[in-house]
Image 1 (cartoon, rainbow over the protein chains, first blue to last red):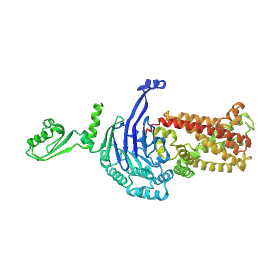
Image 2: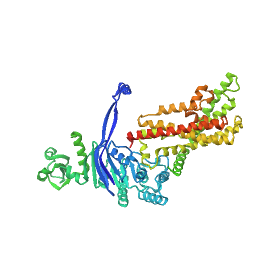
Image 3: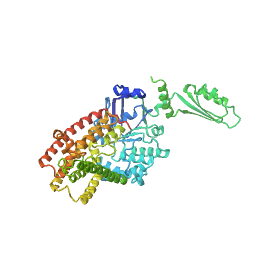
Image 4: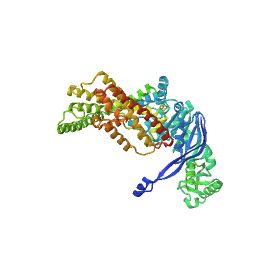
Length: 331
Length: 270
């Protein structure tokens, strides 16, 4: 449903020296620099698939989504979404896609959501019976039926995001772009949105591209993720594959007896890896895979251990570490 | 874009605009009263100072009627200006939402503008009625059904013409962060050369002749003079012809700017 080949986007941005003189100088001559937001990326997304797009701020996630939704033109490369070139903005293409932007309200602020939905019904030429059926299903599933006639600006953030989702899905899009759909929401609302998206995917099987800074969203919704940084993909594969590819370490956790044990010595523990916790009742240390046996043996030998566990590093930590290391050594 | 969609968008914008009751009345009464008071004092002084009974073909009563009509025409022509204009959409990224719609951006925005006209229409009817009650039709002796019908045609043309002029300037926001000064310049130029600030009969012959080929005259003077029966059907047809030609020219200009601007639109704001 989505095919992208060597897609790039370069912005030309102006630079101005700080201060008054810089401002005056920039009136006559400005320096321009090329900012490569997306660099030759390729990907395919199929029907019913939710692809997680993960990356730090400025990595190029939103630029990629904007190109695929047809909002901006690329500098080079090709993309086909449902057989259409997105930036040609064919009306049939636009009737079959949706974009939800967590940081930008789409609905009309001063009007009740129900009025906005009626307008969308006309814009997308949704048949009356289909409109009623979809609105009823979406509002009930997201539990916002009683808020439909309230002005959008008077809704809570969570309720507003649910309305945004309804607005985006009323016309049964086959491809959905979700850009930070849970940003700023409390945990309950985040979970409700996630549960809804899973149910919606199950029922309608659209292709979904999701960007989120919340790893809970990515882990709950996506089987496949793409990690993007500096405009390029650094990983594209199953979510479980990240640990195998990048997690060179495992986390050893030991629960200790309440009394009578030897005091925990963080310095001694640090010989095996990064000490995550060193308290009287619990030790947690991130250890290179080849040193796990040594670390466990030492802990068992020197402390009164009640329980010992060896876990994979959680995916969020792995990704965070990848970005951290790339910041230090971008090469 | 279907008529049904156009009307639906216009209706929504009208509802939104009318929901701000205080804004509506402040804008209606205070705005109109201020404009009319300035005109009244200015022309009272001019007639008193010159001692003339007629200036540029207008008696004092006729010039007041002209201004009442021109001010109300001005509101109907410029009524499509409202918050959420194209330049703001481009600057703040609000355009993104519209680019996703399977409907032309220009059409959607113009429909919104048409909806925003409803308060201006209510004001025009309200103040027109009040004026008729006060003035009793003095200075409006040449108003006929035909002149009214012709004025409606001129008003529709003026509305789309002004919208296109403003829209072209709004689209400059693809390259410039702020186009406010351009819009102020348009407002001033259109007011002066369109016959809103002073009747065009006051202009020297050469300037009046040149101005008749520019788009401004079609904006306010043409509908107002047509309604008041101050121009011949031939002059009306010429004005409509010039205005229509400018609509075509601006349509082409707007299309070119839109296409070029889109290529470098970055959708900042999402």
